[in-house]
Picture 1 (cartoon, rainbow, N blue to C red):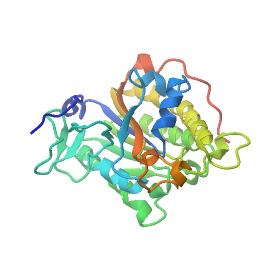
Picture 2: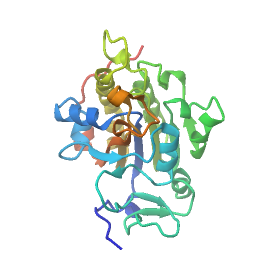
Picture 3: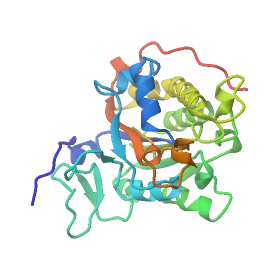
Picture 4: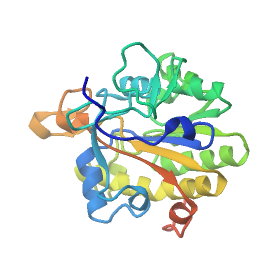
Length: 285
């Protein structure tokens, strides 16, 4: 049997000693994310990403619901290179070939339940409709957590959704001294995103990029709060991309590289990188 192809942090040691923050930048394409990093247009995330920027990975699914079901079972986006790649988290099952000695393996069916069983407060702050708790389907993913939050102001139609999500996350972290698993589904990149590009009348790659610039700045206070609060391990990635006319396709839930290829990063949040001076924030209206 071939060996696993890359190393991961010792997640068995991280669980219990660190807060864990998992942010999905819903619908973010890899090419757009990496281009903004290379151009120096992600001043917040750019300081936290490894040298070279985002890692290109393949999503386990082409739309939000399916991707997050996989994520919470331990199947994060897979490195876009041949080989077997060790996973950070894994729900234990016989024959797993990507569970390494450093993987946090658990008997529970999903990661939120596993962390709750180990003393974590588990919090979901939703964004897109699969987290809105307004329907039976929109309640499935939030129900995995001890507490979940959503409002229209944090959804896809809100121009200031990420700022509102971050403000709530900071409030919840401040109220709680317990080790915490914070999950945040960022809706701003999802259609419609044309509001982030003045004068834009239809969603396009440029408005997608403009939405990411907004999200980058809006996340700054959250990273600073995490750094000031506790040792924190962060995962930031997309769940899937979106086509904007390539090969005649638009949107997602299709098997196209613009959808499968997603940006991924994990990193530790330290005071000297996350709590330094941040760009000024636009006040939500």
